[in-house]
Length: 162
Ligand code: UDP
Ligand code: MG
Image 1: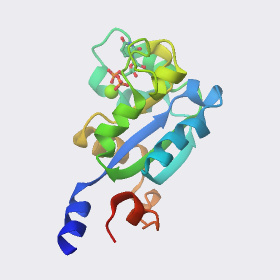
Image 2 (image 1 turned 120 degrees about the horizontal axis):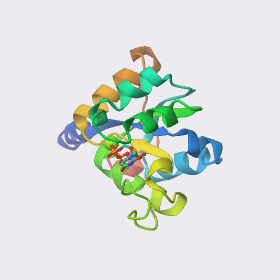
Image 3 (image 1 turned 60 degrees about the vertical axis):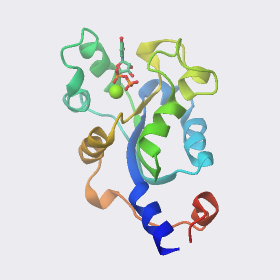
Image 4 (image 1 turned 135 degrees about the vertical axis):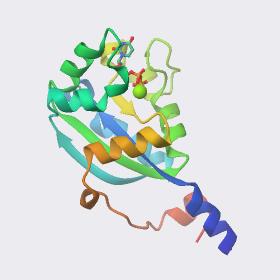
């Protein structure tokens, strides 16, 4: 039992997930949150913010050489973004699966982008692509005191660990 518990704790990770201005304006906040929530992931931080362009450039710094970088940062800073941290076993990788491919034309039906978006420049959601970026993005968007830590009674039913 203790081993199971330790294994569970070791697998636990956090991902930064953001609903971009198009997702917010289109009224998709609840739809997107419910997909992560129903899966069994746990929401540990959430806020709505309009990021500055400078902040958007920091968030997307890895893409600064790409031709779409400027337009992308203009877009991210054009309106409210719902910034979240979701926790769970495998949430970084599986969160990307829930989200679907970057280009909604290539996203499978059943994924968030596959079901709810049409073009790459308006693909409604961001999700961290690995453990390092997850850490960096959580630190960029949230202060430590904005992150909660709590246990939920559903966890024993989701993970089978008490
Ligand atoms: N993007 C774009 N044109 C492209 C590729 C990406 O406008 O050709 C935008 C798109 O909104 C994407 C974001 O840039 O979500 C970040 O790109 P990345 O490759 O990191 O995709 P993601 O991790 O969001 O799937
Ligand atoms: Mg990315």
